[in-house]
Image 1 (cartoon, rainbow, N blue to C red):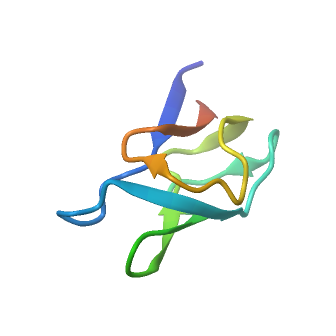
Image 2: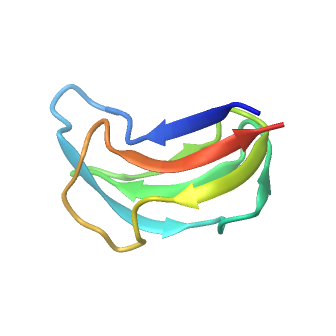
Length: 81
């Protein structure tokens, strides 16, 4: 099965980092494409991070509450169905 790495996206032109506020999932949870899996705070707003694929959360790479996460950092891995 394929593994999809979920990275911190760049939601704005000046965005360089964010804060992982909380996970809505834990390792082993099934997810569907479009499902909100986490909340990330940027300098202006808290954004919902959605799964792009159907699958199971294989690993969470960044703990909730972590500050200064660079754009492009792998936040979690999803094993696709």
